[in-house]
Image (cartoon, rainbow, N blue to C red; front, side, top):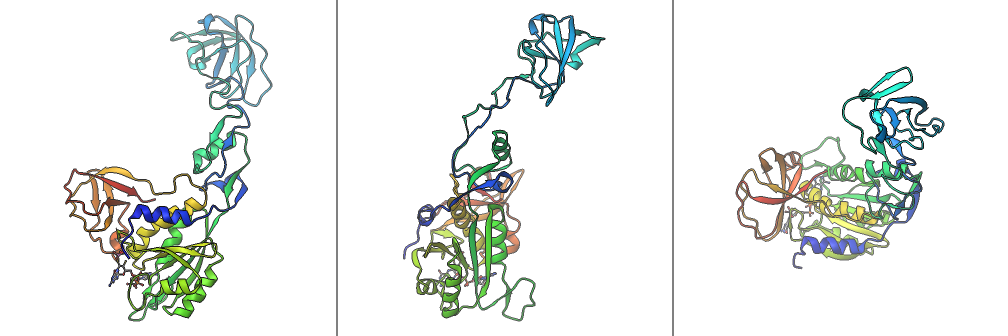
Length: 393
Ligand SMILES: Nc1nc2c(c(=O)[nH]1)N[C@H]1C(S)=C(S)[C@@H](COP(=O)(O)OP(=O)(O)OC[C@H]3O[C@@H](n4cnc5c(N)ncnc54)[C@H](O)[C@@H]3O)O[C@H]1N2
Ligand code: MOO
């Protein structure tokens, strides 16, 4: 089987995914999800011409006064009386302008004696410190497009648009299987030949920001019947992720177990380093991703495939990882026949790759805050050269 280019594997994986059902959730529960439908404004914002400052509402043409202070307008207060010629209305931030007023004289620029007011400093222009009705958005206008990520700013916009709930996809259920006879649970004592199983906690941490329900099905030994049974248990999930047993050794039985459990394999082996033995397919209505066991390979393939798959199923318009241009602070060697995803970190002088690019080098991985994408066949790179990076988290 030849090695599949990363972009082709990503689009084949997305094609396996079906969208999760839509639910209308209270807005606080929508943070970190994606909109399933366009959202339009149910109200004008601001609802009227509002003052942006504390001061006096006046007619700019009457500057510098004198004005007679009559009435008051405060946010949430009664409507102010209309402004007669020669009058000023005491006004506070966020309050509606009285009819007839067209600008705000801030109190720092005003001299007041009793109910008489004069303007100081520079002349007032019409519209000064006024937020016109509907200047942020208008009722029935499009606020957010389907597929938008709901971060803090989008949540604020939807609430101000008059919404209390939003259409989002239900949480994705992701089942994790850690395969390997050598594995023991986190924190358990290790006998010679044993190793703490770090992949499931790492994947759960990666998924934590994506509104998923993670079902950790624990450690599954490398035996075919046990693994077939584990796949059957996992098949109720939306996504099944295994780690380990993906390569070509005698104990790498994830592929045969998946097929024996009734799974249909779509692809295996990607033109990337780390992560070559990655595989994907479907089992019933679940999408299956078989990640390599090496912790660094599992981390990189989860970043490039698992997280985009979850985002895609949950309705994201742009599910793939963001990339950014960057400048190298130190040279890099030529790449081989696979695309390299080098663990690296950003410094003021540019990007530096971590000390070891081995697929099992977790201490080096933990120093990284980005991946450098170096396409297969790249020539050596020098300090100052431009590269593409994928920021991590
Ligand atoms: N002859 C070949 N050998 C290998 C090839 C190949 O093409 N031909 N590919 C190599 C590549 S590339 C990778 S990546 C690894 C991936 O192998 P597997 O997915 O089969 O992973 P395992 O052999 O099960 O484990 C590899 C390594 O990772 C440790 N591991 C496994 N699970 C966990 C876990 N949950 N937590 C922490 N560490 C884990 C495991 O103990 C091994 O040390 O194959 C190469 N071989
Ligand atoms: O593809 Mo592997 O992850 O290089 O060791």
